[in-house]
Figure 1: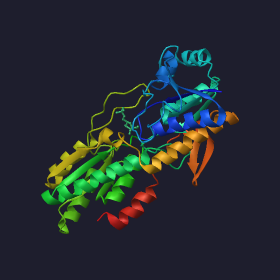
Figure 2: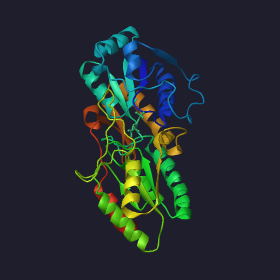
Figure 3: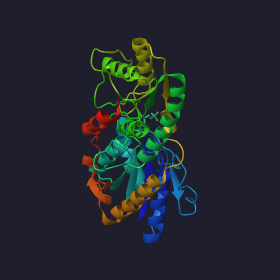
Length: 342
Ligand code: F6P
């Protein structure tokens, strides 16, 4: 078979491990020819193809980013985009596409499957907010990076008697904030799932500091929003999928905490540091398993499906269901919160 593979959306540690696994599994087990589309759906629209084989993929397993490039191009927002993708598939004589991405890239894959594209999805996002899979690759790496950062922020916060707000990624869901916050012993974890009340945060920090502690780490997900009417936060520009460019809630929080409590406060925005660089061993293994399973799905004709991790096993779930957002269970935050956030 001729298999096209593409990586879309924000880059993510483990993308190259998926590409390598797809190429190896396809070439070695099935005698497939694998080609990459450059820059996500944009390359599929513009017929920009990168030949791939085992030799080309040597050494990429531990590398961050994606050798194929990526973009947030939405073929349904580009004039003639859908037709162009289907024309490219025909012109390149591609039998099936493996789309590696998050809700947007896989949402497009699902719509194109409806238009006749034989496509299998692989779940990718550091945010871990895709349904159907217990975990996406990239999440483990991002949590480790954020936890390491929080450990470092602790020692400087303690030395200066400061509050340090650490802003992490997480547009719709606070997976990174919750896991890194718990692992790093944060005093407060603020997530998009629950609009925050700045007064409650400040009261809790004040109580904590009155007990004799003078340093607090507040972890906030970039998509966190204040309760209506409690705090004004400006909004940013939007991309082709209608997503606002985030980043900045941490600064607002740090300023407000300092203003309301008098505790000297600082902010660290981790930003793309969470997405760059080498994947953890866990993510390399998961990405490799996903890549292998995606090629098997292609050969089984299991299109409009996504490979996923459930109970430690790799399974297939309908793409249409998988792209729904997956949120943090509030019990995790509150049960752990009651025990440790004091
Ligand atoms: O990959 C998802 C994500 O990490 C979101 O949490 C974040 O809002 C977004 O990517 C930012 O990506 P970029 O800066 O590349 O637009």
